[in-house]
Image (cartoon, rainbow, N blue to C red):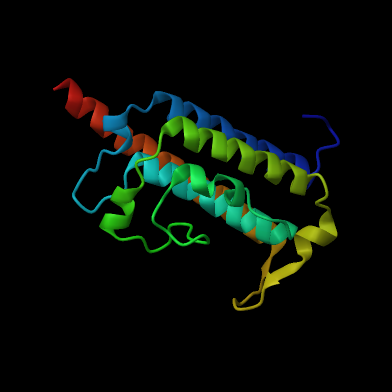
Length: 173
């Protein structure tokens, strides 16, 4: 990065790291590991990766005022969820329903990442300061929402990596 680093550059780097980690984790998952649960109600690695992509897609599209990438991908996933479902509040059966091919999740997230970068191309200080949710105190700005998305995606990436690691160790025993 250069000396003339902008907030958009920092956000691009953060979302770029998320993209790389999603790609890496999806490439490393086999079917058993992708759907492994540390207990009967726990989230699976593939659900966590699908969910983080859905959250990023939903939230960034909302900020950008654009359609979600999900509109183009929903049929490929063939999940029994409503079109706007991003995974919040899913119960054990809903988590188990996400048995998607990791390569499909990676391709979907790549599309989400492209849309994220397109939005970041037009982000400036005024956009970051724009209030997007007045239901909180203080109200949520676009900048705060973007940082929240980065935090959420990184948290879910860590969870997915942990669960996959447990699955791999148990398979080796």
